[in-house]
Every structure is written in C-alpha cells, then in structure tokens.
Image (cartoon, rainbow, N blue to C red; front, side):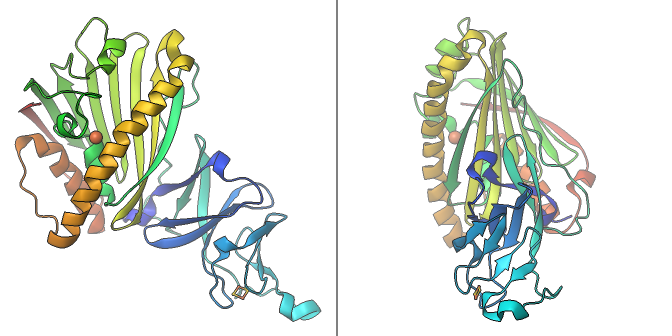
Length: 340
Ligand code: FES
Ligand SMILES: [Fe+2]
C-alpha cells in the first residue's frame, strides 16, 4: 500500500466551473483540473508535452484544455487533439498523451487518485450526514505549513485546546479526563469520558444542562479525522477534516462542520462558520511554528500518555510509508487518564 493509492480532494464541486482550470498539488505532483466535454472532472499532469509550459495556465474550449504557450489542445483523457503549428498535417498519435489521473466526485468534492493500479481499490471517504435532512454543513479550506500527520494529530488532540484556543473553546481547569484509544483496521478510535463543561462559551448553547458530553474522535488512514460531539437531541456535531498532502511541509485541509441543532440549523450557519474559521486560524499558526522547528530539528518527540493517539496515528502512517498495509497491525486498546 502507498499514499498514492488513496483519493484526495482537489476541489469543491462548485469551484470547478466549466471553462475553468485549477492548478493543484497532491503528493508533490502538479495537476491541472478541469471538466471535460461530458462534465466529468479531468486531472492531467500540469505540464505540456511540447515545451513544458503549465497547462493550468491555459484555457478550456468545449471541454478541452489548450496550452497557453503554442496552443496544443488536450482532451479529457490527455490526448493531444490539435497542434496549431502542424495545421492540416496534424495527426493524432497515442504517443502524444499527457499523464492523466483517475477522478471521482462525491459529497460535493472532486477527488483525484494518483496510483494507476492501486494495491487496494479504496472509495473516497463518505462525509458523515452530508446532505441529509436535518443536517447542515459548513465548509472551510485552510493551508497549513506542516505535514498531514501533524495536521491530523492536531485535529484530534485535546491537550492543546486550552492553550491554543483559550476561552472560545475550552479553558484550562485541570479537569481529569479519561479516554480509550483503540487502533483498529487502519483507524484510531478515541472515546472520551467525564467531559461536561470544558467547551467554553460554546457549551452555553450546545450543552444547556451540562450533561455528560458524548465525545469521540476518529482517524482514518491516511488523512482523515472526524470529531463527534453529542450533547442532547438536536445538539449533535461532526467536524471532519481531509488533510491533502501537497508537499512535505504544505497541507491543504478541507473541513466540514456538519451539525444538527434542530430549529437553529439555518440561523447557526454564520456563527458555526465564524467559530470554525477562528479556531482553525489558531491551529494554522501553531502548526506553522511547529513546522519550522521540525524542518530544522526533525521529528524526535517526547510523548506522554496523553499522546497515545499520536503514537497510533504515526504507526499507521509509518506502515504506509514502508509500503505495508496498516490494517494488518495488531489491534490495540489503551485506557489513558490525563488532565486539561
Ligand atoms: S509548451 Fe505547450 S504548446 Fe508549446
Ligand atoms: Fe486546535
């Protein structure tokens, strides 16, 4: 198994308008993304076969992509279908074909897979409750100057919240929490206990009765995290993030906040968006700082029991880096006590 076997988001469906070509980077590969004649997303290597101009700077005519330099035209599978300098002598040739990648569209996202023959035929991750009656989704996109592993770990890391998100999200009051962390089938599943009031002012809306919060976090290989809070009927929230590896120190993160607040669903939208973006901006900053120190000193970490989640996530990422299938790692389940 390798990272190229998985599907990565390259655009929101509504960002990819007909007649538009988007430049993207996934796992260091440059891509030009557009809609072909049939409206389906197309992903070509962002490099013209002729003299290496970037196709993403070109333009779309009738679902074909024209290079901005000498006007070669590529169809939706990468075939060169016109070369202006050859005039009527132009003949199509199977050799003149740009590298083309598989695409899919699901839950309002456009996905690309880089492996031509993946070792496992995965499907894109299904976003929880997306588009379902009673649920609203707010989507935000942010770029982090760090790698996927550190981003994903941050999104399911509780101890940082009191320091990076003081007030808004939770305040440090040295509350004792318990969690069960399980590594299973290429995923890390975390269940928290004893949580009731450490969500800061948000809890006044979400958790009027200060009941125990049902809070679970998930990591799904190789780049997805999902945080779930359930307080009561109509107070149910998922924060799902897909972290797209652009390069070793750049990650583009698509975050869906999908919630069911009953009659408040529509009214809450601007508030949910503002809160999500506010919290994520704080994470962008701290992860940028961490990224700088990692670039200089590497990733030797000093873990505490509260970092068990990270150790499991890293074991899964390391397995894929070695070309192994992390689903074959032994199942493990650990109970951990920590304080926030
Ligand atoms: S470089 Fe693209 S047509 Fe010449
Ligand atoms: Fe955070």
